[in-house]
Image 1: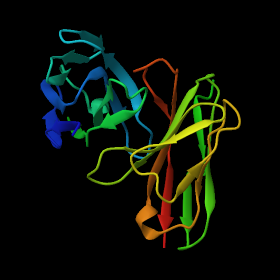
Image 2 (image 1 turned 180 degrees about the horizontal axis):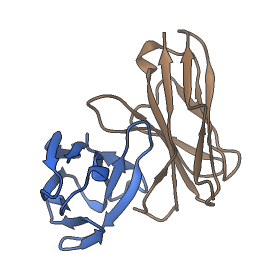
Image 3 (image 1 turned 90 degrees about the vertical axis):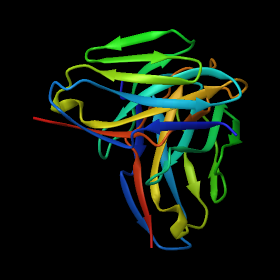
Image 4 (image 1 turned 135 degrees about the vertical axis):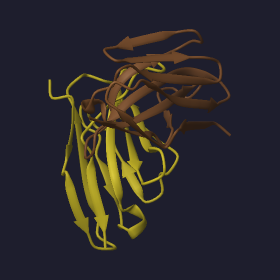
Amino acid sequence: EDQVTQSPEALRLQEGESSSLNCSYTVSGLRGLFWYRQDPGKGPEFLFTLYSAGEEKEKERLKATLTKKESFLHITAPKPEDSATYLCAVALTGGGNKLTFGTGTQLKVEL
Amino acid sequence: NAGVTQTPKFQVLKTGQSMTLQCAQDMNHEYMSWYRQDPGMGLRLIHYSVGAGITDQGEVPNGYNVSRSTTEDFPLRLLSAAPSQTSVYFCASSYSASAKPAFFGQGTRLTVV
């Protein structure tokens, strides 16, 4: 069965304290892996797409990487405004644009 | 561009009532989908459409109906609401090519009492 697992479930950081969020996947065939940010009461906001192992994408303090089994979202020197839930999703071979989501990591960055 | 627009934002229904959640996109995306989000669970696909006149079931389709008469609109109908359908519903759209990022609406928070 295709599975996407995110860890940790929740993470509390001090401002400036870098860390990484993990998304591990067990799927029959990966077409793409997506990272989203979700603020309370809002819809998921697209951050990155990764298509192949070794690929990296960056945006401001965020950097996403991909291996054959997992993806990491690295957060460098986070700020309180980075507080949100980060969702990982995969698109599978033969699945078109259907996405399978993990349950998310709730990140809180404190001053 | 407004992106993906969902209405209403909040709704309370009584068990057995029916209603339609509206979704519209102005990005000319062929692919549209509905997800529900429940605490402790990832977003789960309800129904999707690859273009006008074409719809298919996702992971949790029971109790829901969809149609796609235009490229822009993809309404979700609850036929006879049940408490188990209390959830936050998100509509998303994307280009039809495989594994393109989906863009989401702001959600509809539905409570069935």
